[in-house]
Image (cartoon, rainbow over all chains, first blue to last red; front, side, top):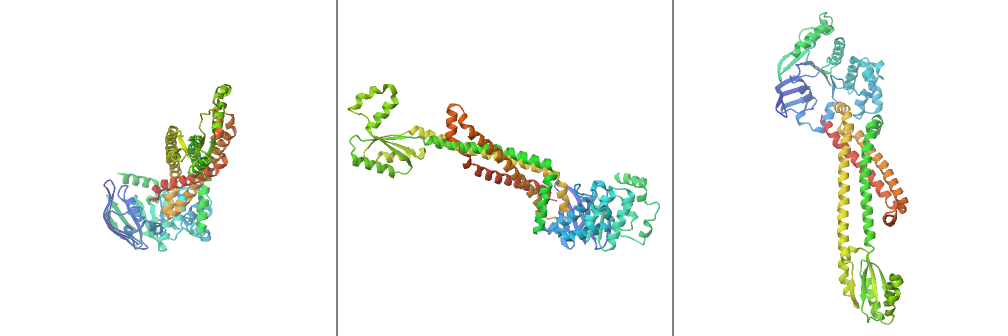
Length: 252
Length: 301
C-alpha cells in the first residue's frame, strides 16, 4: 500500500525533515506512526498525500511512484485515500451532511449517488440523527466523526488519521479508535499518526516510531492483546490525569 | 466536466457571493470606483479628441488667383482643387465679394473703402478648408502648382502647433487610461485575494478530498466575473448618468465654455454602447484574472 524507499526530505532553507527512511505498510494493516512534534510525522503525512515531494528516494502509494506523478493526477490519488485531520477541517457554513456531500460533489459524483451514499456513511460512524446539524452545534467527537464520514465517502483503500486524539476527550478517542479498527476489519489500511505513545501502546498494533527524521523503532503487533486492551482499568485513555502526565512527558 | 457539475459550481459561486455579502460589496465597490475613474479619463480623452477635431475643422487656407484669370482658367482651378484629396470644402470669393467682406468687417468705417470701387485691388480667391489640418504641409505644394494660382496663404504655424498638441493629448490620455487600468488591476486583485484568503480553508479541504484545480477554481471564477459585470453595470450607469447631465446642462455654462461644450461634447448615443461594453469586458476580465492570480497560491497543496 505504502512503500518508502530510502526517502529523504530537505525543505528549502536546509531543514532536513526525513533522513533515508525505508518502510512498508501492507494493504489491510493498522499502523501507528509515533513521534513527538518536529520528529518528521507531518512530513511523512505530506509525502503520502503528495503535498510535498521527496528530495531523494521513492514514495510509492497504491503502486504509484509519487515523485513521478504529474500534478494533475494528484486529485485522483487523493480520492483513494481518506484523511481525518486533527482540527477536523469542516466547513462551518455547511451542515454535517453538506460537508460530506461536498467531498463527493467536488469530485464529479452524480447527485443520485450522493443522496444514497452520504446517509450510509453517517450510519457507519453512528451519527445519522445529527446529519443536519452545523459543525458548531456538534461536540468535538461528533465533528471528528463527521470528518471520518467525509474520509470514508469515497470508499478509500487507505485512511489516514492525523492526531485523532488531539482535540477530543480521552473517552471519545477510544470510541474513535474502535471505529478506525472496525474500518480496518473490513480491509481498509489505517495509518494513525500520533505523539501519544500510551495510545499506541494500548492497541496492539504495529508501531513505527520516528525521531529526528529517522525510523528508530518498528514493532509489529504481537499476541492477542487487543481483546483486553479495552477492558483495562488502567487504560490511560479512560484516565484523563494519566493522559495529561503522558502528554507532559512527551513534550520534554 | 459534466454539465450538472458546471451548474452546481456556478450556483456555488453565486451562493458564496450572497454568503460573503460584505466582501462582495467591497469588491464591487472598489472595482466600480476604479472603473469610474478610468471611464472618466477615457471620456475626457474622447472629448479632447472631438475638441481637437472641431478646432482642426476651423482651418482656412486662402488660395489667391492671378488677376488676369478668365472663365476657362477659373474652371480649371476649380476642378484642380476638387481633384486634391483631403479638402473638405472650397468656397469661391470673387474680387467684389472680397471687397464686400472687408467692408462688412469694418462696420461703420466701410465708407473708407468706397475708393476701391473703381480699381478693386483685391484678388479673387478660393477659401479652402482641409479635412485634417495636419495634412496642410503636404497639400500646400499641390495648391501652389495649380495653373492660375498666384499665392497660397496657409495657417502653417497653427497646423504645426495643432499637430503637436494633438499628439500630446493622445499620449497623455492613453497613458492615463493605462495607468488607471493598471491601478485597478492591482487594487481589485488585492481585494479578491482577501476573499480567497477568507476561504482558504475551504480550498484546502477541496484539495484533500481530491477535487481537481479546475473544480476549485470555477466557483471563484464565476464570482470574479459576476463581481466584474456588476461593477461594470453600476459604473456605466453612474458615468453615463453624469455625462447625460453634463450634456443637458452644457448650454447653461457661462459664455465661451457653454458654446465650446455644446459644439464639442459628443452626444451620449455615440458613446454609451462603447462605454458599457468596455466596462463590462474590462470588469469581467479584471475579476477573472484577479481571481486566477490570487487563488494560485492556495492550489499548491
